[in-house]
Length: 323
Image (cartoon, rainbow, N blue to C red; front, side, top):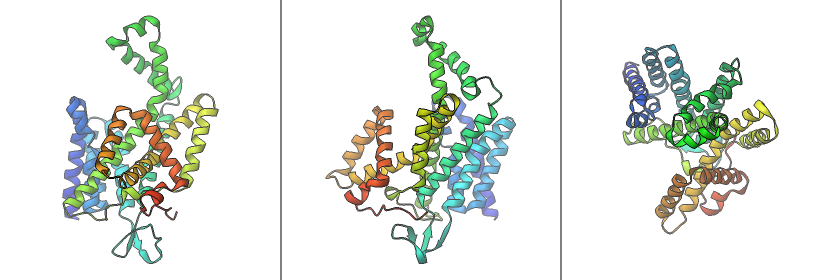
C-alpha cells in the first residue's frame, strides 16, 4: 500500500502539473495533452489504489486554483482514468472463454472494445452534465458558446471581410453547434492515446498488470451500432435542441467505429507486400484530409460489424465478443 501511495502521489502531481502547463503556449498544450498518462500508468503498473490516489492528488493540486479547476480535473481525467483502470484489470478463469477472447495464462481479460464503450459512456455523461449546467442560459449550451466564438472570430485579422459582411454571427452559430461534438471526440482520442501509451510503457518497464490487448482484433458490442444509428437519425430528423443533442451524441458514438475502422485498415495493410508503406500513406491522408478520411474510416468500421473484413483479409480472429 505504501508503494501505491508513493507512486499514486507522484503520478497525480505530475498529471496536475501537465494540466497547468497547457496555458503556457504551444509546447505547454502538447504537454497538457499527456495529462492523463501518469494516471493510467500508475493504475496499470500498481493497480486501482494507485490510480485512485493519483486522481485524488491531482484533483487536490488542481483545486488550489479554485473548486472549478479541481472539479474539471476530477470529471475529465481522474475519475474516468480510474474507471478504465478498474475495468482493464478485471479477469476471470478462462474455463468458458470464446475463441476470440483475450486469454493469457488461463485468464480471460476484460475486452478492449468494452473499455472504449466505457469511455464513450463517460463522454456522453460529460455532455449531459454540460447540458444540465447550461440549461438556465438563454439558448442553452449553444447560446453560451456563440458569443464567445463570435468574439474570438471577430478578433482574427483574416475575418475582416466576414465582419463587414455580417457573417461572423452566422459562423459563430454554426461553430457553436459543432464544438460539443468536437470536444467530445477529441477527449476520447486523448484518453485512448494516453491509455494505450501507458500500457506500452508499463509493458516496456515490465510492470504491466494485464497483457496488452490485440488492438487489431478490436470488436465492439453489437447494440452500440444500433445506438449510433438511432443518434444519427435523431440528428437529421429532430428539430432544434433535440436534433443538436442527437447529432452530438452520434459524433461521440462514432468514435469506437473510428477505432474499429483503423483496426480494419491495419488488418488489410498486414496483407500488403509493404505494410509500413501502406500505413504511412494512409496516416498521411488522415493528417491532410482528416475530416473526410475520418468519416470514411468510421463508415468502414461500422460496415465491419456485419461484413467481417478482418476475417476475410487477415484471419485476425475478430469475430464478435460475448456480451
